[in-house]
Amino acid sequence: MRRFEEGDQVRVDIPDQADPDHDRLHGQYGIVVEVVEDDAGHHTGDPRDAHLFRIKLHDGTVHHVRWRDLRPAPGR
View 1 (tube, helix red, strand yellow):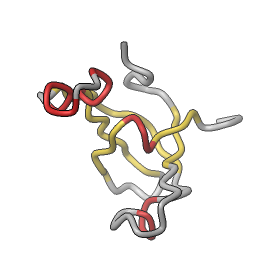
View 2: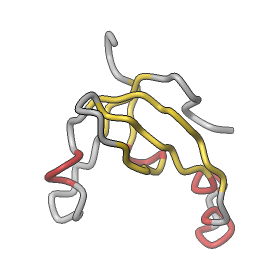
View 3: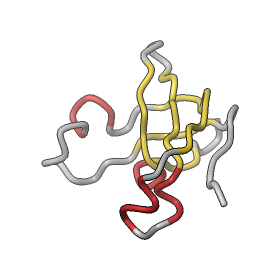
């Protein structure tokens, strides 16, 4: 089961400041524009990892983010 679908408003939440994506993505808001399935869930043993979310941020940039780094955007 996917946590997010195309059209959902989301907030990127990467609390680990050592994560290479933290500085540029943490706290950004966007919309899910595509959900891509891959075999990551097979490798990690967690079926939720089989979905890669393509997010268009409000600044117009597009990034691919896993479920664990996304939260529903409150009030958006």
